[in-house]
Image 1 (cartoon, rainbow, N blue to C red):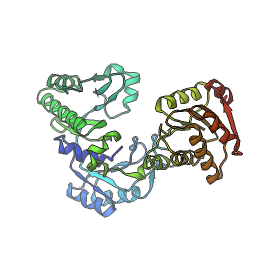
Image 2: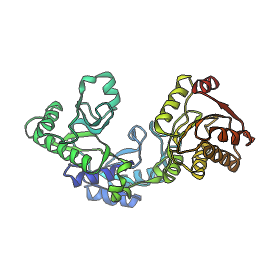
Image 3: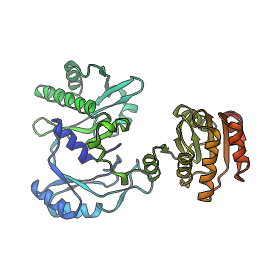
Image 4: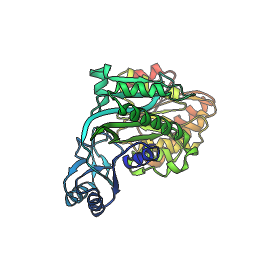
Length: 381
């Protein structure tokens, strides 16, 4: 689950991580009042779940409270389109109004889960304030990675090592190491999957401040953090992904046109790989789950059909707890209720596969029954 920058900074401040003074505004008048309390000059930042806000006009420097109000009025209520959003963009409902900082140097710092390291990894760089992916591609030597032992946590010497690698000196090393230690504590105690500060800035006479903040919370740990779940902003989520999440369905929307329906995450990934291997593009990741009932299958397939980019559907199911006939009935019910009948390529194996195939034969839908993924690949070319 993603949260807004102002929410992320509130969490950081609770853990002793320095952040700029400021406040969040829902109206131009609130923005004016916050800017006035900061002395007049302020940075007004659109609050959306997307990067690239600055290039998209979502971050503005203002010199007076009135100008802050004008910028807030121009942002609140419209959609912001960045390189991380679709062409429709995401709605701006609030802006963060913060004090202007005298930046001396911009750094990058994050903690995320790394599959290769099989645990959390700290990523840091002296090259902050820009696309970290670009830095990694062009000057990888500027990227520092440390994977603390997840059982014992971050050692002080590791925090100091990163501080020195970032070019900090003197008291900055102490302050940087303390900040990193607190950041690790926040990451661990709140079950985060990502915490990113870009830029982490050296300002004024050497103070270190988190000028930006991005936090993702691990959904599987939400039962431990009911308070954090209240930070969710459904308006920022893809509508289809939001519907799936509310129904307990594992669905991620992609940019292809081949709808994929699979049971089991591993099989879903293999199916998407096969689609990509033959030059087609999957429109989604969709795992209906091993124990789905007919109604849940119907809801899942309805979500898939609501994506206008889907031109063809590939069903790849190995029946176990989820019987093939239940899957087939759910699919047929969704198509008939929606009145949408895309071409379907279906591979059904396992429990009640023949019964499931018969459901498709009797449905009147355009379903091609196949035996292997190689057969599917031939039909997707």
